[in-house]
Amino acid sequence: MKLIHLSAILALSLATVAGAQTGTAEHSAHHPASAAAAAAPLADGEVRRVDREQGKVTLKHGPIANLDMPAMTMVFKVADAKLLDAIKQGDKVKFAAVNASGTYTVTAIEVAR
Image (cartoon, helix red, strand yellow):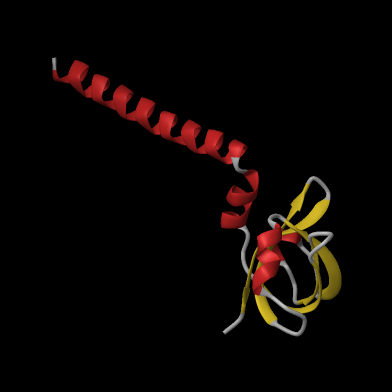
């Protein structure tokens, strides 16, 4: 009798864990940029140019670990144009970037303190 109860509890626990994992995957599918941003480590950079019309920023940056990218200066798209409101040319920044379908995209950026 105890074995049946233990088996039922174990099965219910596994079903609950599986459901929680599926829910997370579904949420990430609806919000890929936010899911990627949460996973992307911050890199150091300096703003060289802000192009609000095109939704782009030019950054001189250090290595970006999650992109396996060495230090360089390059243009990034931004996931949300509002990110550009908080930065200006010359600012030292911390930022997160992802490769979104072949386009390097900044998903978070803030002036470094």
